[in-house]
Length: 305
Image 1 (spheres, rainbow, N blue to C red):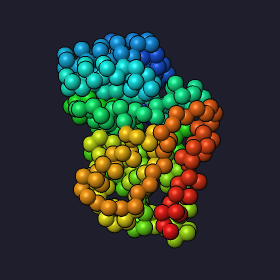
Image 2: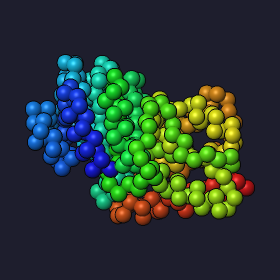
Image 3: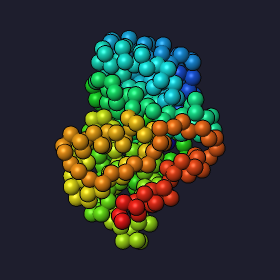
Image 4: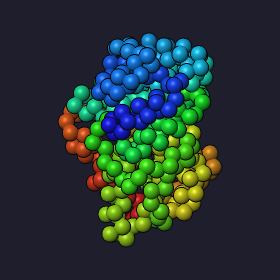
């Protein structure tokens, strides 16, 4: 996913001279071409996430479009006060790209995991939250983010995300993408868990379970219409995410259902109000916490009983 981001940010900066790149101890390889061709439009802030957000807010006040790139855990948590007060409270046109969403930095442990950022960022007024699921979603998500006027947080992946598309999908802020239509069960997913969900639906189909899949690339504003429509069709919803139980996709989807009074069978796959304390290969860690193909299959089968 980072390679696609490298291509996307370069093209965006080439097309729009208002875009300013802001780095916080990250993005070294991703910005090599930018340093070469747009050296006057890149600001290195070092290990100073809060300062970077303040710098970005100031730059935005002058009519530019700053794009901050850094580790999601340090942007979403360490710089939260500055994101709240300097960006969202002032409604500045700042884009924040937090890499390593979920347990993307799997070998660095819980201090580097970003498993509560959806809860944190969606709680902020004026903030839009996006989460590309695959490499081919990166460019259209970034285009949507910089075209939108206002604060945007992009929950970014890191590496080795599996592709499910043949070509770049159309991304519209506030709209879910229907990956697969079905009548028995709806799986709503966000981020890089999409590939595990697709694999699961193929296996469930062999068991006679027809599954609909909604990819929530936009987490805020969430696509209530798509959720309600699918819920009415299948009567069962399973959310899948690499995020904590509270405040993530599960909470956003359940809130949408509550707001409309729709009653469905509802389950979620996520971290169960716990920190991920494991180190190692990402897929192995997911399996330890049931956030995997096996976990999806087990939960889906129980819901069909």
